[in-house]
Length: 112
Length: 115
Image (cartoon, rainbow over all chains, first blue to last red; front, side, top):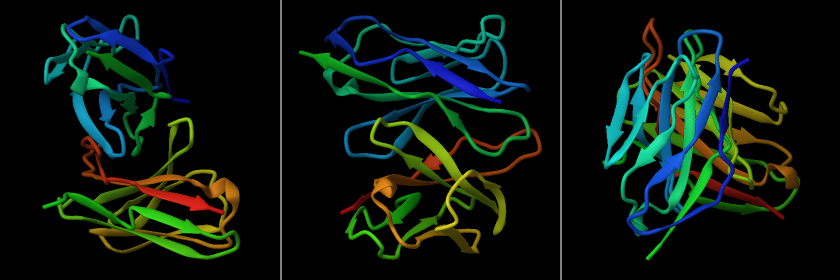
Protein backbone atom coordinates (compact mmCIF):
# COMPACT_ATOMS: atom_id res chain seq x y z
CA UNK A 1 0.00 0.00 0.00
CA UNK A 2 0.87 3.65 -0.13
CA UNK A 3 3.14 5.08 2.54
CA UNK A 4 5.04 8.27 3.33
CA UNK A 5 8.16 8.45 5.47
CA UNK A 6 9.37 11.70 6.99
CA UNK A 7 12.41 12.51 9.03
CA UNK A 8 11.85 12.40 12.76
CA UNK A 9 11.65 15.64 14.64
CA UNK A 10 11.85 17.94 16.31
CA UNK A 11 14.08 19.98 14.07
CA UNK A 12 15.50 22.97 15.92
CA UNK A 13 17.08 25.78 13.94
CA UNK A 14 18.18 29.34 14.50
CA UNK A 15 16.49 32.11 12.58
CA UNK A 16 17.80 32.50 9.01
CA UNK A 17 19.16 28.95 8.92
CA UNK A 18 18.60 26.64 5.95
CA UNK A 19 15.86 24.06 6.33
CA UNK A 20 15.50 20.61 4.82
CA UNK A 21 12.82 18.14 5.85
CA UNK A 22 13.17 14.81 4.09
CA UNK A 23 10.19 12.94 2.67
CA UNK A 24 10.12 9.71 0.70
CA UNK A 25 7.13 7.78 -0.51
CA UNK A 26 5.89 4.43 -1.76
CA UNK A 27 2.97 4.33 -4.17
CA UNK A 28 1.55 1.94 -6.72
CA UNK A 29 0.42 4.57 -9.22
CA UNK A 30 1.43 8.10 -10.14
CA UNK A 31 0.70 10.15 -7.06
CA UNK A 32 0.38 13.84 -6.47
CA UNK A 33 2.54 15.04 -3.59
CA UNK A 34 1.81 17.67 -0.99
CA UNK A 35 3.25 19.48 1.98
CA UNK A 36 0.81 20.62 4.63
CA UNK A 37 1.63 22.79 7.64
CA UNK A 38 -0.08 22.80 11.03
CA UNK A 39 0.52 25.82 13.24
CA UNK A 40 -0.09 25.37 16.97
CA UNK A 41 -3.75 24.92 17.75
CA UNK A 42 -4.82 25.15 14.14
CA UNK A 43 -5.89 22.88 11.30
CA UNK A 44 -3.81 21.83 8.34
CA UNK A 45 -3.02 24.27 5.56
CA UNK A 46 -1.74 23.33 2.16
CA UNK A 47 1.78 24.70 1.79
CA UNK A 48 2.67 23.45 -1.69
CA UNK A 49 2.05 20.64 -4.12
CA UNK A 50 3.42 18.88 -7.20
CA UNK A 51 1.37 16.67 -9.47
CA UNK A 52 3.96 15.02 -11.69
CA UNK A 53 7.62 14.08 -11.84
CA UNK A 54 10.10 16.98 -11.89
CA UNK A 55 7.44 19.50 -10.89
CA UNK A 56 8.57 22.00 -8.28
CA UNK A 57 6.03 23.31 -5.79
CA UNK A 58 6.77 26.58 -4.04
CA UNK A 59 5.07 28.93 -1.60
CA UNK A 60 6.16 31.42 1.09
CA UNK A 61 9.83 30.70 0.37
CA UNK A 62 9.39 26.93 0.73
CA UNK A 63 10.16 24.61 -2.19
CA UNK A 64 9.93 20.90 -2.94
CA UNK A 65 10.71 19.00 -6.13
CA UNK A 66 8.96 15.78 -7.13
CA UNK A 67 11.77 13.27 -7.74
CA UNK A 68 10.40 10.08 -9.20
CA UNK A 69 13.79 8.38 -9.49
CA UNK A 70 14.39 8.69 -5.74
CA UNK A 71 10.67 8.71 -4.77
CA UNK A 72 11.28 11.84 -2.75
CA UNK A 73 9.70 15.23 -2.12
CA UNK A 74 12.03 17.02 0.29
CA UNK A 75 10.94 20.38 1.70
CA UNK A 76 13.47 23.22 1.72
CA UNK A 77 13.63 26.85 2.73
CA UNK A 78 16.65 29.06 2.45
CA UNK A 79 16.10 31.19 5.54
CA UNK A 80 13.61 30.19 8.23
CA UNK A 81 11.80 32.59 10.53
CA UNK A 82 10.40 32.13 14.02
CA UNK A 83 6.93 32.25 12.47
CA UNK A 84 7.73 29.06 10.50
CA UNK A 85 7.63 27.05 13.73
CA UNK A 86 4.97 24.42 13.12
CA UNK A 87 4.45 20.75 12.27
CA UNK A 88 5.01 19.89 8.61
CA UNK A 89 3.31 16.92 6.96
CA UNK A 90 4.26 15.29 3.70
CA UNK A 91 1.36 13.56 1.95
CA UNK A 92 0.49 11.76 -1.24
CA UNK A 93 -2.67 11.18 -3.23
CA UNK A 94 -2.35 8.11 -5.42
CA UNK A 95 -4.17 7.72 -8.72
CA UNK A 96 -7.66 6.39 -8.11
CA UNK A 97 -7.35 6.71 -4.36
CA UNK A 98 -9.56 9.31 -2.85
CA UNK A 99 -7.85 10.24 0.39
CA UNK A 100 -4.45 11.54 1.37
CA UNK A 101 -1.84 9.32 2.94
CA UNK A 102 0.20 11.34 5.43
CA UNK A 103 3.66 11.02 6.85
CA UNK A 104 4.11 11.18 10.61
CA UNK A 105 4.82 14.92 10.66
CA UNK A 106 7.99 16.81 11.53
CA UNK A 107 7.97 19.51 14.18
CA UNK A 108 10.09 22.55 13.35
CA UNK A 109 11.18 24.90 16.10
CA UNK A 110 12.91 28.11 15.03
CA UNK A 111 14.71 30.06 17.72
CA UNK A 112 15.40 33.81 17.52
CA UNK B 1 -15.87 33.10 5.17
CA UNK B 2 -14.48 29.89 6.62
CA UNK B 3 -14.14 27.30 3.85
CA UNK B 4 -14.42 24.18 6.03
CA UNK B 5 -15.94 24.72 9.44
CA UNK B 6 -16.48 22.15 12.13
CA UNK B 7 -18.12 22.37 15.52
CA UNK B 8 -17.44 22.18 18.33
CA UNK B 9 -13.75 23.07 18.54
CA UNK B 10 -13.40 21.41 21.94
CA UNK B 11 -15.45 18.56 23.35
CA UNK B 12 -14.96 17.05 26.80
CA UNK B 13 -17.23 14.20 27.72
CA UNK B 14 -17.49 11.14 29.91
CA UNK B 15 -16.95 7.56 28.86
CA UNK B 16 -20.07 5.89 27.55
CA UNK B 17 -21.65 9.08 26.22
CA UNK B 18 -22.76 9.64 22.62
CA UNK B 19 -21.56 12.77 20.84
CA UNK B 20 -21.62 14.36 17.39
CA UNK B 21 -19.23 16.60 15.50
CA UNK B 22 -20.57 18.68 12.63
CA UNK B 23 -18.78 19.77 9.49
CA UNK B 24 -19.77 22.09 6.67
CA UNK B 25 -17.90 23.25 3.59
CA UNK B 26 -18.78 26.17 1.33
CA UNK B 27 -16.27 25.42 -1.42
CA UNK B 28 -18.66 23.53 -3.69
CA UNK B 29 -16.60 20.37 -3.31
CA UNK B 30 -18.16 16.98 -3.86
CA UNK B 31 -15.95 14.95 -1.53
CA UNK B 32 -15.64 15.20 2.23
CA UNK B 33 -13.51 13.37 4.76
CA UNK B 34 -12.95 12.68 8.42
CA UNK B 35 -9.38 12.24 9.64
CA UNK B 36 -8.21 11.34 13.12
CA UNK B 37 -5.01 12.82 14.58
CA UNK B 38 -3.63 10.97 17.57
CA UNK B 39 -1.50 12.32 20.41
CA UNK B 40 1.66 11.80 18.35
CA UNK B 41 0.22 13.96 15.56
CA UNK B 42 -0.23 11.01 13.20
CA UNK B 43 -3.11 11.58 10.77
CA UNK B 44 -5.23 8.77 9.42
CA UNK B 45 -8.27 8.73 7.15
CA UNK B 46 -11.45 7.42 8.72
CA UNK B 47 -14.18 8.05 6.17
CA UNK B 48 -14.73 9.67 2.82
CA UNK B 49 -17.97 10.61 1.10
CA UNK B 50 -18.45 11.60 -2.52
CA UNK B 51 -21.81 13.14 -3.41
CA UNK B 52 -23.28 11.75 -0.19
CA UNK B 53 -22.05 8.23 -1.01
CA UNK B 54 -19.62 6.45 1.32
CA UNK B 55 -16.39 5.87 -0.59
CA UNK B 56 -13.81 5.07 2.06
CA UNK B 57 -14.49 3.35 5.36
CA UNK B 58 -11.20 2.46 6.98
CA UNK B 59 -10.85 0.12 9.92
CA UNK B 60 -12.91 2.17 12.33
CA UNK B 61 -15.11 0.77 15.12
CA UNK B 62 -18.77 0.76 14.17
CA UNK B 63 -19.38 3.08 17.11
CA UNK B 64 -18.34 5.77 14.63
CA UNK B 65 -21.04 6.59 12.11
CA UNK B 66 -20.68 9.33 9.52
CA UNK B 67 -23.74 10.96 8.05
CA UNK B 68 -23.88 13.16 4.98
CA UNK B 69 -27.25 14.89 4.57
CA UNK B 70 -25.99 16.75 1.50
CA UNK B 71 -22.74 17.42 -0.37
CA UNK B 72 -21.84 20.34 1.87
CA UNK B 73 -22.17 18.53 5.19
CA UNK B 74 -20.53 15.51 6.78
CA UNK B 75 -21.23 14.85 10.43
CA UNK B 76 -19.58 12.30 12.68
CA UNK B 77 -21.55 10.58 15.40
CA UNK B 78 -19.74 8.54 18.02
CA UNK B 79 -21.56 6.12 20.33
CA UNK B 80 -20.38 4.78 23.67
CA UNK B 81 -17.26 6.91 23.81
CA UNK B 82 -14.06 5.31 25.11
CA UNK B 83 -10.88 6.80 26.52
CA UNK B 84 -9.02 5.76 23.37
CA UNK B 85 -11.27 7.94 21.25
CA UNK B 86 -9.55 11.03 22.65
CA UNK B 87 -7.92 12.72 19.67
CA UNK B 88 -8.27 15.64 17.31
CA UNK B 89 -10.76 14.97 14.52
CA UNK B 90 -10.38 16.89 11.27
CA UNK B 91 -12.95 17.36 8.59
CA UNK B 92 -11.73 18.07 5.06
CA UNK B 93 -13.11 18.49 1.55
CA UNK B 94 -11.86 18.26 -2.00
CA UNK B 95 -13.16 17.92 -5.52
CA UNK B 96 -13.03 14.61 -7.34
CA UNK B 97 -11.69 14.45 -10.85
CA UNK B 98 -11.07 11.41 -13.00
CA UNK B 99 -7.33 11.96 -12.90
CA UNK B 100 -7.32 12.40 -9.17
CA UNK B 101 -8.80 14.60 -6.51
CA UNK B 102 -7.80 18.17 -5.96
CA UNK B 103 -5.94 19.03 -2.79
CA UNK B 104 -7.90 18.78 0.43
CA UNK B 105 -8.92 21.76 2.54
CA UNK B 106 -9.11 21.13 6.26
CA UNK B 107 -11.21 22.45 9.09
CA UNK B 108 -9.74 23.71 12.35
CA UNK B 109 -10.20 20.40 14.11
CA UNK B 110 -12.25 19.20 17.07
CA UNK B 111 -10.28 18.20 20.12
CA UNK B 112 -12.22 15.39 21.79
CA UNK B 113 -11.29 14.46 25.34
CA UNK B 114 -12.98 11.47 26.93
CA UNK B 115 -12.69 11.33 30.72
